[in-house]
Amino acid sequence: MIPLTRPVVGKEEAAAVADVLASGWLTQGPRVEEFERRIAEYCQARHAVACSSCTTALHMALLTLGVGPGDEVIVPALTFIATANAVVHAGATPVLADVDPRTYNLDPAAAEAAITPRTRAIIAVHQIGLPADLDAFADISRRHAVPIVEDAACALGSRYRGRPVGGHAPLVCLSFHPRKVITTGEGGMVLTGDDEFARRLRLLRQHGMSVPDTQRHATRRLIVERYLCIGYNYRMSDLHAAVGIAQLARLDQIVARRRALAAAYDAAFADEPCLQTPYVPDFARPNYQSYALQLTAQASFGRDALLAKLRARGIAAKPGIMTIHREPAFGGRCAGALRHSEHASDSSLLLPLFPDMAPAQQQEVVATVRDAVRVLRDGTRGRKDSRPGRQRPLPATVSSPPAKEPIA
Ligand SMILES: Cc1ncc(COP(=O)(O)O)c(C=O)c1O
Image (cartoon, rainbow, N blue to C red; front, side, top):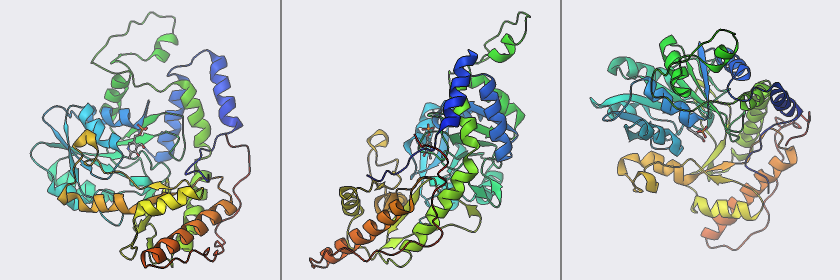
């Protein structure tokens, strides 16, 4: 199988973990502090607070804003379920709004229309790494006095109007799950420009403890901590952070490679009338955490039929982003008003894309997709012709991957 994705990890990560093991300090400590400092610097954010996942980052971000029972939080209907789960974890109600059919991101007009007197926040998701229209959300935020939380789980390394994602909203949440552009195994972070938010986040992630362990252990003085609020154990460990520091050093190279591979896919599918390549607004420079194709109205066959053919031929493509409201956990129903989300979810597919993808692997994905589309199209027209399609050469943008070190 050509996999959908594969994290880039090598001897630097292994050495960093070995150093932490040898140090004797395994939980949240100096490596976490260093990782936070480096991510804050990269994203041009004032504070970075590491935690155990993006889901816990979102939960804490909402608590920091005072979201609780009786409140509503607007989220896109088309997103990973964790975005909405975090709202429920905070005791509030997620209100689903539709996405822009071109970008798959929350449509600012739909979000604004969903505002009620109970709305306490809007979560703008940078879906599969494509920045949402942050200026439009900032304008809504100002006019309605409703704060924006960015779910940037997939968007580290993306840019909005030239600036890194992470430095804009009051609260931005990142993920370091292995499906993201860099990973710590599991992990998350909240970025914020607000000193008081940062203080609350640091309390929430560590049981509400008034003094972090690092501070208590750094002195011979007796410091007895107090527990200032009901907090959580949402800590990141130093083992995870050490991997993250090594990964961050690779980020620019990884993103450049992902962009080159995406450009090659764009060129290879540009003339296929059944397929729509990703739309990128002028303000956005995505990291291509995923590469999504959408079936056009000219495709007389279903997305799942195409996926089945690809999987049978060794390509681990998968369905596009899920819709929240059609999952059993959220009612499991279609909702007429969320038609762009439903259509995007049903008609899109994600193709393999990973930094060490060899040109021959990408060539194989392209040839297999084009051939499968041709067979399905011709089949639905009643023909039986299944000769292999002409294999188009890949454009010159794809060079060999940086063969620096082994990929685990
Ligand atoms: C948009 C979005 N939000 C939140 C999450 C949750 O991230 P984590 O697995 O770090 O909790 C994901 C993970 O895939 C995601 O894609």
